[in-house]
Amino acid sequence: MSPNAIPDLQQLAEQIKAWGLELGFQQIGISDTNLSEAELHLHRWLQDGMHGDMDYMAAHGLKRSRPSLLQEGTRSIIRVRMDYLPEDRRNSQDLLKSPAKAFISRYALGRDYHKLLRNRLQKLADRIVADIGPFGYRAFVDSAPVLEKAIAEKAGLGWIGKHSNLINRRAGSWFFLGEIYTDLPLPADHPAGNHCGQCRACLDICPTQAIVAPYRVDARRCVSYLTIEHKTAIPVEFRPLLGNRIYGCDDCQLICPWNRFAKLSTETDFAPRQRLDSSTLTELFGWTEAEFLRKTEGSSIRRIGHIRWLRNIAVALGNGNPDSAAKTALLEKLQHPNELVREHADWALQNLHKKTVDIRPNALLL
Image (cartoon, rainbow, N blue to C red; front, side, top):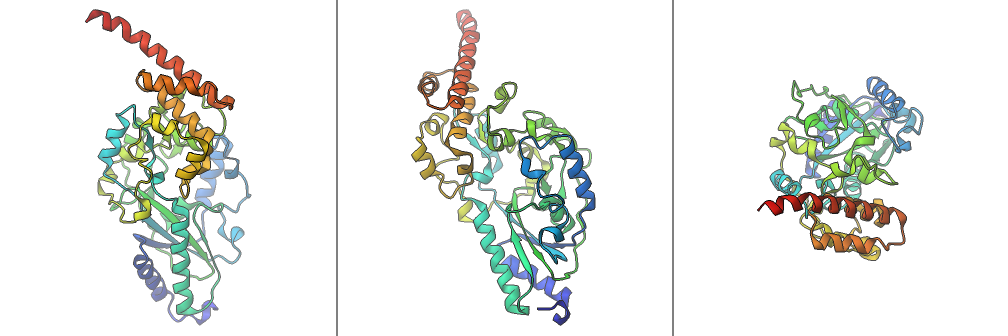
């Protein structure tokens, strides 16, 4: 439908927000397409090589920061957020203090969010079509070069914090984002103000000091990057810092004071599956490739593959206690056909051996 045929764009924008809430989104905002400031920040980050092996961040030319190049005719962007926190964050903090347990980023404990959010966005677009007739649009959920956090900030959903995550004053940062690029000239919402103040809790808590300056994250040091995006050997200097984190890292969100306002998700798809919120490292290390593929079906974890799954767990076992179960599991992987797995298992065993040697003198003093 031609925008000229729409009688009241402000009323339509309010209706879109109401429909979005009915569909299960916690907030809906609208932004324009001017991302010039974010474009400069992205270029500086890329020029400094902080994207590491994520070549896709440098691909696609200016499409990431200029929406009309990605989707011709885009005049405004409908932005949504959906809470995903599956449990009280104190449970996560306790888990990080349990070296025999596996820590997986809370967003990955349940079903892959991409499909759920895409379906909801499509339903929202269908509602708009039913009201005004056909219009130009395209929905995205991490499926295209989009500066999603910059857009969300402009749409009033929150501000980009010093850890580079989006923060909402009433909901913290435990939420997913999705967007609809549209040719409708909808009125834009006011951008959110920054409320980080002098706080630097996220910088101080980062296990690998990947937040090299406020609002500046060096992905090459980030645990999430190292355990998910990085495809080869994890640099030795970072391995002891990973602790029991085998897929992603939530430390900067767990420490953020704004997350005291975060609400638990009511979406059953985001609830933990396969006991991923309580499994031991040795349990998960014992999964065959067939078991890994079966138990991660419909999960975002599957994207790293079985080899990197074993790589990550080997490092976590090496950072844990030097007990017989961990050593036995690692010894078995020394015969693994993949060299990446063998090398990380060998490092882990050496690390456990050092801990055993360090413990013995203290034991003699008892």
